[in-house]
Length: 238
Image 1: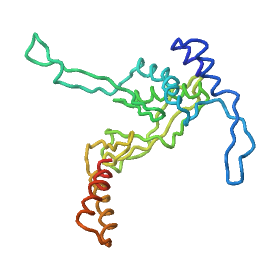
Image 2: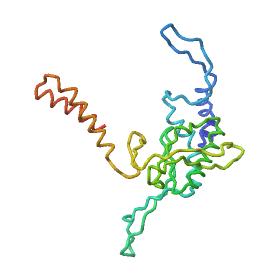
Image 3: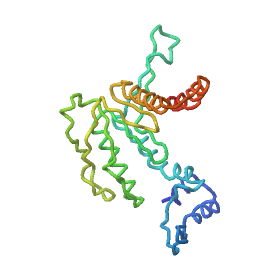
Image 4: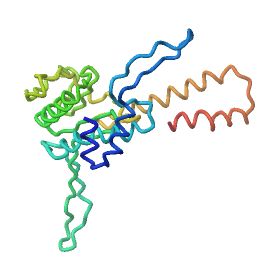
């Protein structure tokens, strides 16, 4: 599949063959405290530690992302009533941006305004995984939705997928998280309610931990200021 993805970008054949040779007919050895292990054969795939892996991973996933973008079904619609302004009218024309996926490397997020749209995208992703002989861990799927307001209604939701020659998975069952719960995406915490309480609690814990560590120490004012500026502020900013 990597060969097809590279050919899709019309790379020269010599370049394609060179890139494929980096991941084919390889063997590895693991260095242990008792010496290196016997060589073992490595499956064909993209290693996470390789320098070129981020670029190849984008090329590898591009067919899936292109299909998701072209087959938008009930995408999330981001509407801005402020831009662009029309010249012929005093009112402003809403600028609509439709989004159905956010992907960075192997961290993927699907967005939809309806359950049917999410089922359609999940069917496409399952076919892509089958086509590439890979598997997705459905137990790690996180569902954030504003369709379930009460915590007592957080029962598992079954997404019924389209069965095809490339997909034998009839459904994927995911339990939604409460609207007040925060979830992490690319190092940033979000929640459906838009509340910042979780971030405030994190900052409070960092400050309390910092104070507990410094409390028994005999430090000058200058030392405390230095630790505050170079340690605590950086941790809070991160």
